[in-house]
Amino acid sequence: MRGRYLIVLLSALGLALTTSPLVAGAAASRPLDETVKQLGGSWDYFDDDVSIGGRIYHGWGRPNYSVVFDIRGWDWFVANVGADDRWGDVAALIVTVNGEYVCRYPVKKGQKATPVKIPLAGKETLGLQMDRTLVLGEPQLIRGNTPAPIGGQQPSASATGNPGYLISIDPKSIQKLAEDLRKNLSRDPGLSGTSVQLAVSSFRLVTGIPGYNLDDAVAVNVREDLSSALVNVEPPAFRLVERAQLDKVLSELKLPQTGLIDSATAQKLGKMVQAQAVLIGSISDRGPGREVVINARLINTQTGECSVAAQVSMRRYVPQEVVAEEPRSSGDGSSPVGEILGSVLEDALRGKLQLGP
Image 1 (spheres, rainbow, N blue to C red):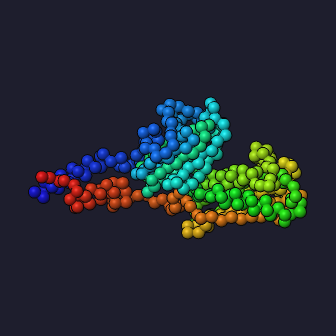
Image 2 (cartoon, one colour):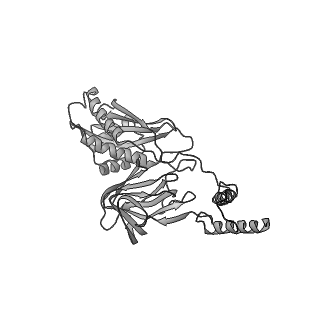
Image 3 (cartoon, helix red, strand yellow):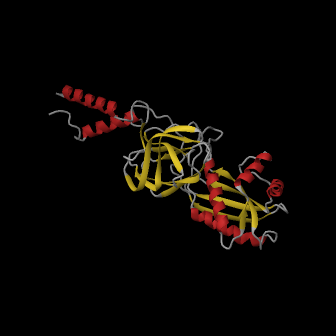
């Protein structure tokens, strides 16, 4: 009798292993199409080709302004976000998980698609918000191991080869930073009492986690959001140098767009773009259990002095804590195979699996 039960148990294990999508050394995946349960908003999915930045992607989607998906049971969301080469323009994608802001991806027609990889393990909802000039090429939900980047582009990485990671930036903190900079203009007689022509440089990224870098998208998001906030402060205090003009000059000066600009360089840059001040700053992730701090300083391009500064700090939120990814062994419950074996055996011991009459 025991032999009979053992044979049935092994048959059940074999069935579980051959039918589970987590086995075979590859992650299970499915397109993020219209059959995925939606909790709010609406989503259009097209099973044909779309061109983003000259590259063709098969299968693409877009929300009608916004959509929220039920993603319980899935581990990753991946896609290629960009503007459709046929009718796209300038837009941005905002991603939320469990209702929490995760990141923002600005796009522009003609630019290469940006690979998106959002961790979902243990989460319940995925929210996407954008306008209709933006598309997601080959959007997928993935269950299992960490997916490889899709779309032919690699994520930013540190010198040790570890991928860059994203952190959430509170829009209210960005607004406060802009308002504090406006208030502090009074500390520099050369900048107060006038509408300042301002060049906003890239932000330097600092992390308190050894071996890891913040993703470059964090600096881009802060720069773009702060630029909009500076333009909209009341009463008006800033006029911004166009981004394309500033990027061209930075390229001519052979300056890396990493926020590393000193006083002498700021004066030279100001003269070339006719800016009265150059904004420089940093985004510092102090590590788990601590906070994220954004520093911003204005360099007067006439004097080379940095006499206006502001700082904001906010609660640290990372979509998934940054940890080193160790290879998953097999057969011990820590791998997909081990997890299935452990689950089936546990059910059998609890009497949930019927092994025979």
